Length: 135
Image (cartoon, rainbow, N blue to C red; front, side, top):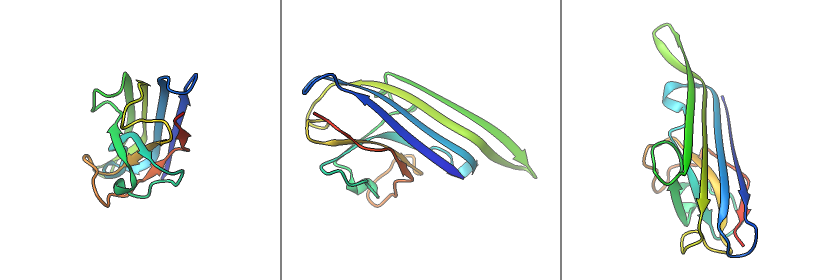
C-alpha cells in the first residue's frame, strides 16, 4: 500500500489569502483502509503531526465537507474472492483560504489523512504533506 499527500500553497504577500491545492492518493489498499478523512491542519511549529491531538486546528477538506471550494474523489475497485479492494483512491481539493484565528500568520499548514471518519484525540495521522508557513 502506498499513500501520498501533497499540499501546494500560494500566498502573494503577508496577510493575504492563500490558494491551496490538496491531493491525497492511496494505491492497493483494502476497502477498510482507503482515504477516509482528508483535510488541512495547523501546528505552531514545523514538526509533523503524529496524531490528531498534535494539530492546533483541523478542517476536513474533501467531498464530505463544504469547506473545500472544489473537491473530487475518484476510486477504482476490484473484487477478489468476494472481497472488495480499492486499487486507487484519489482526492483533489482546492480552497481559497482567508486568514483568521485558526489559519494565522506564523502557523504551519499540513495536508493530513486519517483512517477515521471523525478524527479525534490519539487518532494517528496516516500521511501528511510537507508544511507551509503562513506569512
